[in-house]
Image 1 (cartoon, one colour):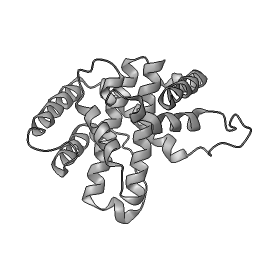
Image 2 (tube, rainbow, N blue to C red; image 1 turned 90 degrees about the vertical axis):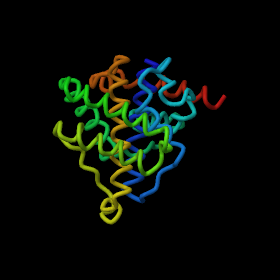
Image 3 (cartoon, rainbow, N blue to C red; image 1 turned 45 degrees about the horizontal axis):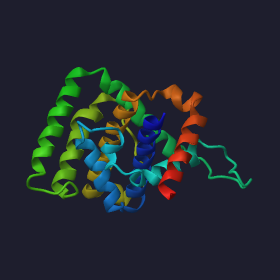
Image 4 (cartoon, rainbow, N blue to C red; image 1 turned 135 degrees about the vertical axis):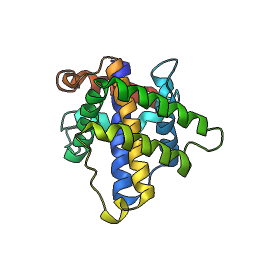
Length: 213
């Protein structure tokens, strides 16, 4: 359950960052770097190593998980955050796309090859450079998008028209696919969200306490 919570928190964090980019064109550079690195972390020592080995890197995602899956009222009786249907849609869409991907061995093989090619570019460019972000975006466009059920990203039209914003969003969605693959590998399923929601929230709260201490 810990690994499922960590990976689901990463998916939540990615969905939130997609919203940030689509609405204001900005994203936290350190978060972006951490999540892009998760794409190329293909042989990690453990689940947390995919996200830089620090729980604090996923603090926002854990908080989002608690707010989104937790009860509408907080422990002090005050009304919690209103659930965001757009946020939910991004998460469900990523899970559905990953389900399609795992049934396509040819695309999975191509995905691995393209990610390895991107790793080689790191010899010359930083992972948050326009070159690498464009490379990740093209992987998403070429391999993930054709699977069908495309993710419709909503936001400010002027921002969504910008190539830089499009590349960041697609790169984040590729990171989302990576986290969704990992989530499934550690036992996560769609029914986990429905039937193990309380356990996910409880574990997320425990992990947040670890960060604070």
